[in-house]
View 1 (cartoon, helix red, strand yellow):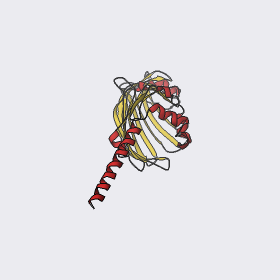
View 2: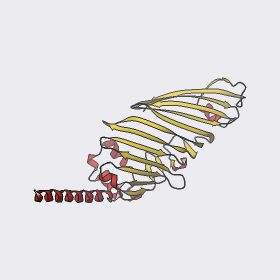
View 3: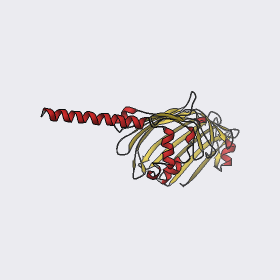
View 4: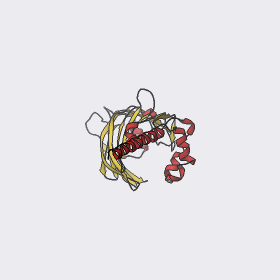
Length: 275
């Protein structure tokens, strides 16, 4: 019995050493090599078509470091560019198959910070802390923004049969924002608050205000295949925002009464589409 106990203990110790070796090997695997293998090597045949197409856009020469800790500068996907991406994977949590990853998007004093944890079964948690809007840019984006946002969003979700199941989304971002494309407009103080309104449906509310110039509120929601929004604004006739809303075809609902925005107009808009 004593010999059996020692044999079992020795076997367990050996398995732990093998597992630590394998985790260390994976953790220190060169990130550029992994990207290359995902594009046209060992792993490419096992990836979904859409994922493989996305990875094909990555520049292997821009990848540095390992799976556990590295960076990519710049990161370009679907015509959207992030100045710099830096990642760190917790080795301890990776060893127990509950990986936690931290991403830093952009460089400088105001990067965006993303912390994520993945559980067995497809559940995951994300926390995204806002930063400078100049970090993200690209010709594929319909607008270009400047400024900084503060606050964080926390998401709890899961992936079931390839579909995102949103369980909880809380938090908000706020800050002073300026639109630079398609025209230059000061949006003032902006507040964004999204939420899960269904397992596969996202809702959001955005407000924008400059004292004496404009007050605007936009609500919207998006599901698997479609999106829609409605918006209202009160705009002084001399406000920077007025020409943009007129260009976008917002409907005039009449003149404003006595207020700090008069003389001005009350406008509204609705829209939607399919993905």
